[in-house]
Image (cartoon, rainbow, N blue to C red; front, top):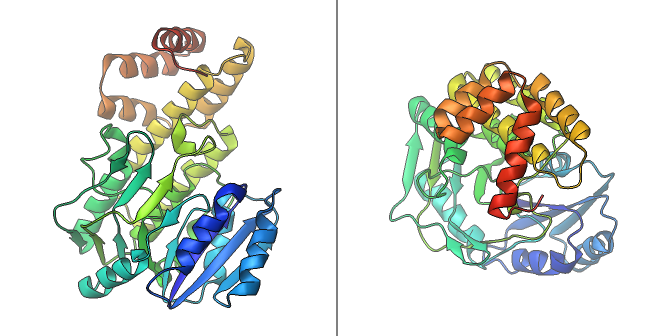
Length: 340
């Protein structure tokens, strides 16, 4: 059986399409766990409505804690041998889980990743001509290196593995054996933390080839719709969780440190470009981000990323020239038409 976990929060316009698409799967041996994360709209009632109509649907109502806390609650409640995730504003084609289950069984894999459709303009579909297999300790380390450094590939095509949890099917044991390494308070890049822990336990991971079956909807509230600014406390928890995972699971630290530097860079850039925020507040927020950024990671990110602007920006930040950095970002945003 597959346990499909759906974290639910402020998705009322889309939730029915999401749940209906899971109930319509050709693979019917499913349990669907809807985790209501204290949603303030009509989502809790919709969840209960589906649970009353179909015995495969279970509902967890909890106080708002963010996506990571919802994922952890869902995993703890799951009973299936395999686990998949669907975001509450997305939907899947009828054969989605049948294809993933077939892929995991035929390949003898611990986890597989599907292709997907990004519901945006212009439409973007990931394509692979054949499956890509990672098997054994060295290959899994390569997988994780590519996983952490995928954000450096601006085209989104060269690196084959994604940070998302919703385009994958996993053996449940990978998750239950990794929950102790996860911090449920993380609200941004939580799936990066989760997959770092989970994929490091894989003996075999397969990226499947074929028609995309998962439909990812980009809404105004989607983190991926633009630069997302989170509290420095979130960044600090993320860095600590990734450091803990790398240490416990014996991961190569270089790609982890490059990723952490990149995460700090994005947060600092997002803080600098906020419109309508006084310079004093921007400086304070950026200095707080710098204070929790592990030493040397910004420099490693700048070297890996390349480009004169990034190198100069990171050098100035590390030298304490915060106000000029804010000025550079503000000018760039004005010239390029970016909105804060």
